[in-house]
Structures are given as C-alpha cells and as structure tokens.
Image 1 (cartoon, rainbow, N blue to C red):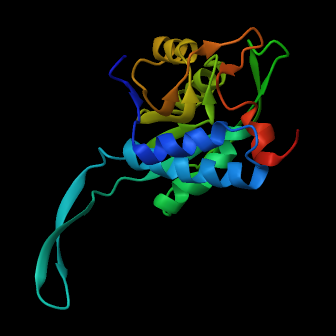
Image 2 (image 1 turned 90 degrees about the horizontal axis):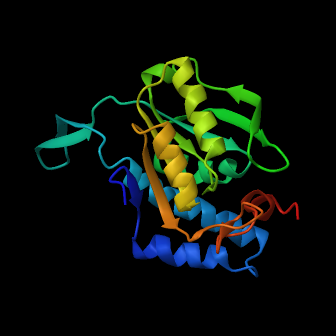
Length: 210
C-alpha cells in the first residue's frame, strides 16, 4: 500500500467500524459511531503537528512543556455524509474552523456538480483536512481537494472512515501530495458503485433519510 495512504488499525477504530457496518445499527447509534471514529482518525491525522517548547508555571514549579506551534486548522466536510464527521473532529480540536463543500453526484455517480462552497477567508493560511465518510470512486474527494487547491491552500489531508482500492488509486493519481487517512480499506466497488462490503449509503444512515 502507498505510504501516503494510512489505514488505521487501532482496535477501537476497527471495533466501531464493525458496529457501523451492521445493517441493524439505528440512526442514532450510527451517528454517534461516526463521531467517535472521526475523532480517533483525526487524532492520527494530526500526529505530525509541530510543537514548540514553552515555560508553564504549575502549582509546584516552572515546567518546560510543549504546545502546538501556532498551526491553524480547518476541517472541510463534503456534503452531506461528511457532515457526520465534523463533531468528532472539532471535539478534538475546538479552535479549528469549518468550511463546507456541497457536491451532487450524477445518476451513474461518475461525475459531480458543485452546488455549495463556503470556506474560511483565511483557508490558505491553515492546515486543511477534507472529510467524507467514504472514498468510493474518488470523484467527490478529487473535486473537493481540487477546489481547495484552486483557492490557494497547499497543506491538505483527506480523512474518511471507509475506502476502497479504486477510490484510493484515483485520489492518489489526481493528488499525490495529499495524505489519506482511513479506518478500513474494503474489497472494491459493485456494479452500482457502492463500496463492498461497505456500510451502505452513509448519508441516508446518518440522517435517517432511507
């Protein structure tokens, strides 16, 4: 596997994804699991944040300790399934800003149309993490990342819960500089371009629309 594609094998992530896959998991539990998994993946995706040393006065003495070195972050979910990942990420990093990119897929899911984009004014000064629940064909992820790059952002990562080889390959070919963090790499796509075994339609399961 490409070193820029990081499959996170932490036991908690794997356990929660197993519960996410269960067709009997209801909307409330599905949403909570997505939030928890997203927090754990964001923890790994931010592992390389730089630190600087500071002096801090504790109740006992002066401590030489470390804080994040002034880096600013923005999470950008792809609407609509990516919305389910925001709460977990901002729980971990409350100071992060949140942008949104809305993409509508064509009937055969081979193309997407942008219908909404609202990003922080200073997005080019921030470390960007684009988020979507699944990386299937890769078309949505590629389009969203291209949009962020067009605006001028250069420090970009992509985060998803479940991916497949087809989507990972397409994303790496389009954006070889973007590291991908995912909780599971599934077998592939079926004829309807759903990930197999996957989790079904993530947006419908998060929002209870099916």
